[in-house]
Length: 274
Length: 274
Image (tube, rainbow over all chains, first blue to last red; front, side, top):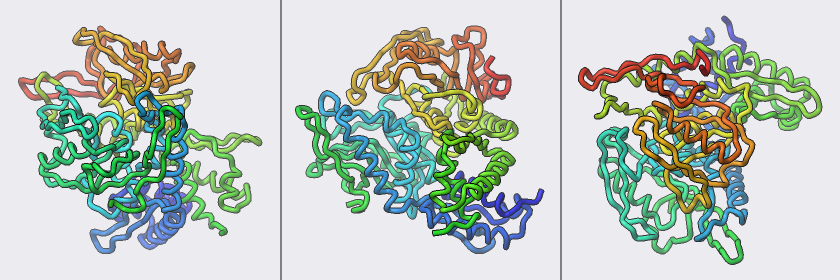
């Protein structure tokens, strides 16, 4: 079957979007569409221009025999700001206030389109870095980790609070929870990570950063390196923060249980990891 | 800025793929691309043909003033069989065998491309049904639930084993674990589900179906209806199964700890929910 350019463009766009951060040889497309490499190159030129114009991402071309094309998800700053503003609006609703001054965020974490965008925002920040895996702690960080992982095309590694028979042998560490100062445990299946990997850690919420710090310690146990820290919402606690470098989308300034108000502002995403 | 057809096709494909099961008015595209509705209709004709030819999904056109176009993810049977076969090959590796005859699957659940395909397979099966939410139990079911949810564009609802302060007030039920016959607890935040919803429940593994049955009971507490059951791997226990209708991708026939063999075959996906 001979493909028309218009059909190739639609199918190619789908294929590239489904295979982010993966080098695809030009021969893959020329064989699939029974088309000359020159036609495929022209097609890719159109895809590249549209992806970049619309802030879908970059299309990197690697020349040579072992070369090909790679789709790198990368949002434009304006769209990232929209995601951050959208989160602030959504999370400011006073009915999110829970006893103890906690914020109800479970619905946001369960919203697939929102998580998809959040994942792409963080994947954009780490688009140029070598990331081998995304690590999080069960349960609330999982949707964010999975969304980032899809856009970076790397595995998700889930740390648990307890050991399960279905995890096989595990490595366990104790760490001090930042705000409550209690000793807590983290468990990770031995099989879930090889040594020498560069790992991005993520969670939905960070106060002092005890959990993040626990994950950092766990990385050391596996001879892995911290590649970055990505947080959806950080609470104002900068003076005693255990984690120095991180990216956040939203900063929780103040919660007043009495007035039932939640004060949020943009996180440090654009200031870089300071 | 005036868009060329080729650029419109690329951008439209991306937009449709990011907004599954969502009716998009033709005016959205004609305004965005500054193009006549007739041109947009022609574009969509090309997208539709390619999506259907390549098994990406369906493009449903709803005529009239409140009409538009809707992308419905739907894989071809041949590709679904490939996903099932891929899972069987992957899960048959003898080093997955854990003490007690359990199967290590955490890496498969952490593989974003694999989960994306699994999610699309289940979304294909329920493409024509009204689904309002996907429910699962923490932790291992979450990646599957999130992947299905992304393709059906509905929220994920996560049931927990324990109650957390960040969940607000909760509804809790007790249920009998199918295989161990122990009493267990399930907790769901009151805010996480409205009444009257049709809910698809999912998990990574089902033996007798105690956990699934627990979720069914929880649905009743919320005045919601069961829309379907989706399982990645079912174990051979049909005689005492608590759940009657479900779809599975893989069936675990036998595990021999002595011979270190795992015997798997295709699940009941194509036989329908029997």
